[in-house]
Amino acid sequence: MNSVMEIGDHIIYMYKGLKEWEGSNKEIIFSKNEKLNEFIFASEFLKDAKDMRMLEQAGKIDNDRNMDELLK
Image: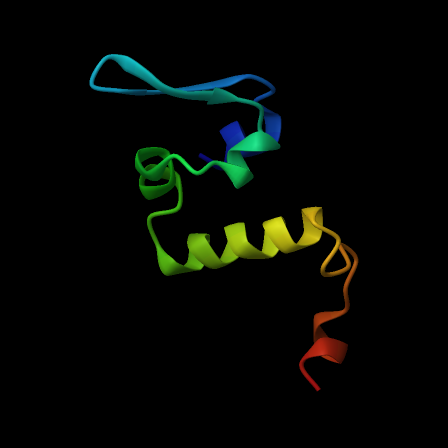
């Protein structure tokens, strides 16, 4: 899924032969589609990564943050 998230410019997620979600690699982070999110962000690690990306996109945290400084 990493390559889809990085290079896919138009993504279609299908479930049981039906289109469940459609959008860009930028929009997928903000998807509220439960099936899509369960598929892509199945682990706690990936859920955390999604949360961090959403905070970056919303301008809540700096995209070029220094994690060493933040963890002090």
